[in-house]
Length: 109
Image (cartoon, rainbow, N blue to C red):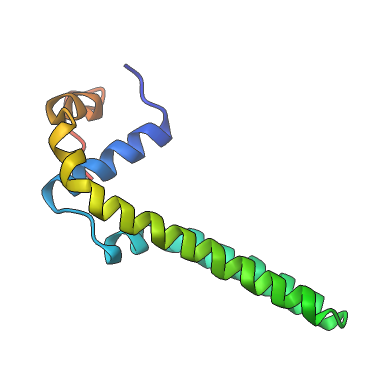
């Protein structure tokens, strides 16, 4: 089976979690680039709206950014709590097979 880049990345992350369960720190590190980009975009939007004397819109944007990051942290907490069960039902041999690259060597995250 040919994996898409997204599928491969997710299975590699799961494989890495098999050896060491996910933690809030690890999950935050994995998503740091996305959160930095999110905060940067919202910061630019807040500065622009505030400079046009729309402080209420700027506050709404700040709330949206905080909400998006909080939502992700909630999902991280859920992943950490669900992982013990998920790791028991995943077929690790099959995951290893899927992660093998073309020359037969195994890719491990």
